[in-house]
Length: 244
Image (cartoon, rainbow, N blue to C red; front, side):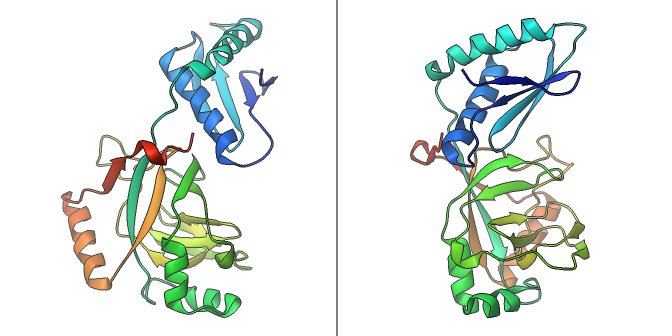
């Protein structure tokens, strides 16, 4: 049994491990899918993280003791359910200098050409460990060690929506305009958070993401299609890509 710990006056946390890897994170999302399939009375929401799942409940509807019993019962059947099938999503990115504000610094730091940076950044299949920080922001695993970069010493006050950056061992996409200290190496015209859509957030924890390099002409064509609502992101389900 994975340990269940109190988390504040209306929450509990289940710890599935102490290392950030896909097996541990897969169990986090496997249990979250159990809560979706077998709702527990009094449970209001749950938040997946790298290695744990935080569950918030209404103490007026269920006691901690009763909740602990229900969660332990669900743990017993974790192995009986199929793991969720990952979606594979392709995100187009333009790495031209006008969008890649820090690509020269990355090139100098690692002694790489721009083309080598683009190749190293677009080759991996990134795993979405969790969502957070702001609506639609994915925490991605899989960045090449050859691209690991420290954050900016002085974060920018404004980073544009769609900016693609590197920070330490992570790469990510800014779904909204915000301050930020990541090294910006490109930009996507795709909106990761779009309030016009029924499902406002494009990515989900457990997705597999790959970046696709595009030129400026293609960037502006996709941007126009995104603005008029005609753009459809490349999404497929491949059982072979299932990381859980």
